[in-house]
Image 1: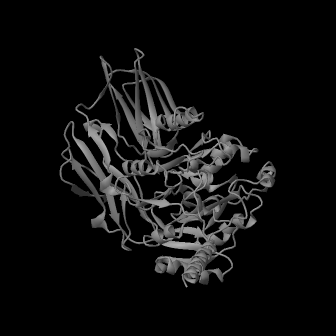
Image 2: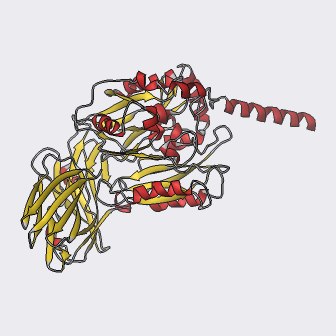
Image 3: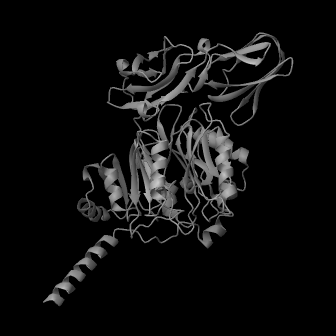
Length: 558
């Protein structure tokens, strides 16, 4: 009898294991390009899709902006407990094919604790579960509509994956724009303010293009005016940026690190320094956070995470590096719920393929959109301009005027509020902070509400990680002991003024990419610079007086 019970138990465990395993994909393709695909990629650029560009101005939507759901593929490439976690905070769209699979999935999900009220199925033929790589890139076009940018997927022998976006876009009921570029989602990150980053794999896979022509194309289709093409430090086959880097916010980036004894150390430090020395679209330097991810014989794919509204899902594998990685996320993203997701025996993580690669956030077409260039750093008291924001309810709902607020506190005191008021019609709003004194330290964030109940903050997480600036004691900056200078208003819209106590030798203005956009010599003590035709973003103002003293100031054009 004991032997019989043991046999029955073994059989039961085997059947449970088998019934579980049938729901997980056994990929017909590897994550990397096959030998056949590598050969085809040499000429694959000749097959690029090509279609009309979106109506300008275009804004690419960042992963950390408001999302309405997440997309995964079945059979699964992720642990079912991740599906469960996702289903309790957002809508989960599951790609299935054939349609009959949806009945099987429903039973499996329900038995696995998934919130089925938030799950729906899209019947879309697909070759793999790497929805990140062939999934949609979301934009807001010049008509304030959320649309999708398509590209030619860099896996030539996976036609169903490449074609899937047509069906996905139909499910989303959005306009689709075909960009004539070979690309992949794992090698693309964007900040929502015109900056994007990829590895130089993009140049290899588009040999008929230059960095400049790719920049032009990205600007037309994605609204990207600063495309950072970076050398890949990972030293592996994939060359995807999400294997070692991630935008956490407009001015925050996470970069992996390795020990000084690792041959790749200098490559990782070089890319980290590139961000540390660059200006963000907000005019400050990037806050660069580092996560120890030695890889190789350790599974440490920590940058391959998914940001979904106020949650961050981080892949972990039970190594000694997991807890430190979670701590880095908690430091970098206060206020967010950080959720570690352990790999399963059916869905092991790889250093080149983990959670981010196998999921894809879905933008909310009715998002409450806020664009704001924050006051950061130090400001002269006389030149602090009102807080300005562009606020649009993309779902067409009216804004709740009494709930358009700036929350602020001075020197760590109690939070106060002041209303954002409509200025000049359209979507422009402003609020002034009164009573500020020299040396005050100010924290603030914006919160807005529309009639549909959409409520958003800027920065997204609100009070937990507000914008911060300091009021200076004086209203001018010394350029030399005998000369003072002020630059105002800042941020500006149509113009800014360079005001000096003496005549100046020269004024030069450079955009964030380092291109000269304005130059004047023999300037008077007061120079008005027209910015009407300039793109929104950060500009460096280089001022030299008659004695050769140099002053650099940053100006934000909104």
